[in-house]
Image (tube, rainbow, N blue to C red; front, side, top):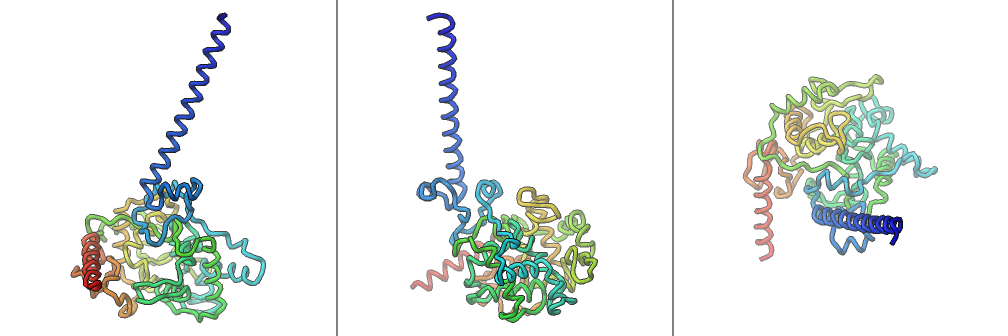
Length: 371
């Protein structure tokens, strides 16, 4: 073999080896991704993998699976829910209602606040203050799972609730106001908009990124004193040192909403539970934070939630809530309870001992009921 032919043969062999190594590396990386997802996410299995053609369902969380184990790393590997833009709703009467519904969510006070143009029945906050981007932000307390899961049974009322009841609860608790008649144009518009956002989510499924992220419990009680320091450093510049927010130039609503006081959410609101407030803060606060770029540690989120929810705010009669005591959340701060823990521990934690006790009591009740 001539020197030239020998050199060509060596190059050919080297090229074949390089191609083979690349193929092996690609296969290894593919298997690594599959194994990572299979180990990290409860809905993944060889069966579901092949049935889906190798693609995870963008709505992989079934209602039977608690999302507490969700981590940012896993979430980044899966499709995250994002609702449609209401701008592109149909150009008909229904589309007009959808767009009006979004406007009501984003600028509630302009229509229903103390100086509202339609009615004066809420506290001056907007639905969007709690449901960011008009209920369309990933883990921004969005509406991604509302249409797919309602009507449903809720422990708080001890009854099956429809979407009208859900919206009414927000108006009466988070907006510390009154609800609207079911057949009013405003109520129908909000329900049309919420249903529009969730129209692609399969029934009884919760999409990834819906609602509020569930933070792991602290091993200690959340600390309002530490939370006050976090608030002063990270929150007061927008919500004011006294927590009363910053009024908008139009005098009808807030540029930054009040976090306590007469015009904030009342003690019956979901965000009055510090687990909900802490999860809300994690991926949304302070301004600019996202699930990809959180700005506070988990401990800071729990502590600032404890501080904010220790401040005075409007009262509400909660005597009809949680008729089944074992159905009360571990961080519901008002008795009576079935678990023997104090109101203080139910408000600030540590919560894991309460959860363990409730789980034990439910098992005991189930054993007794089955006999």
